[in-house]
Picture 1 (spheres, rainbow, N blue to C red):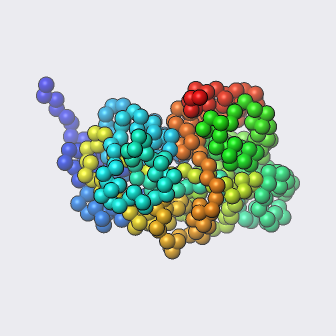
Picture 2 (cartoon, rainbow, N blue to C red):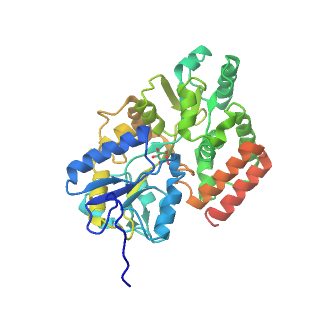
Picture 3 (cartoon, rainbow, N blue to C red):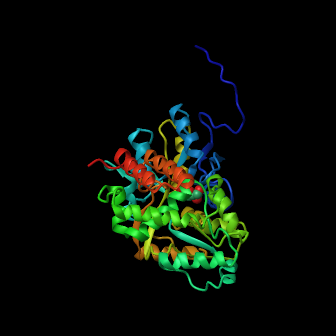
Length: 405
Ligand code: BGC
């Protein structure tokens, strides 16, 4: 059969193309600034290739992941895509969609460049399938300093009780919804931060590795407290992406937002300087981590170009340029703190000493099926507030998608 393939836009990569299509959800603000930093290094180090931006906007990949899934199914992968280290990456590995990069790790000297625990999260059956770009922290509470000052709040709360007391002070000062919140996955994040405070890191880890039950009284108590926390949030939360909630904070309509540290980069990119940060109250020195990594999909049109992209992602120069603008910290252990904003310098110090726990909505703890089930359960709870129903849905999701006993 002689198929005529319409010659599509000159943007489209093809056989023998110099273009490397990089698929992410980093389309605006601090996320775009981070990507631009990396592209700058790619342009120098991979001068024979051309960057093609395949970004699909939407926080945490809410739109991108669906587009990617359908492209992979149609055997039309981008040259490389963003995937979270941990269970989420294993989805693609188990579906045989990724090339093994073990040889490149040896060739580029990456094997000892990253922390061993992270390498373990990228490895399946002794093979390693992606190059990590960063480490993000999920459990950070961002604040608007002026709004806090007006309510007479001068210190960051370190306990849940202290936090509720501050939220009450804010309400009394006229801030109707002091805790800005967005839709499903952002609600998952807030609930997880609260679970860390209630259960402590070890039991929290157990929720994902199967050693902590989702049916216990401690989970009922956490959901009940979470329900109370929702009464301090904006009612239109279910229609909001994280950046919409962030705008409430910037505009002084809210005082706080629980969000990953991409928020630092985004506030910087938007020129908003009046912000503070603290670990979510009651989380102590727990660092809820996640990592973005890049892969070489099977069937990528420009494997050589992708390899050059991956080499840039894994290089010390690439990691410095990217992370300085992205709010995250380098995954490599040999990148110095010079040139990093104050927030990341603090995060780099914390990362060395903190207790690490993973995140479900950002893939380090859960596969995508599990993430989806939890996300819709949280969304439902946001409108019906049914504690027993949420606990039941979370327990069923763990039984269906979690580790099998
Ligand atoms: C990604 C971050 C991104 C955030 C918000 C997370 O899942 O790991 O890189 O900034 O989503 O879009």
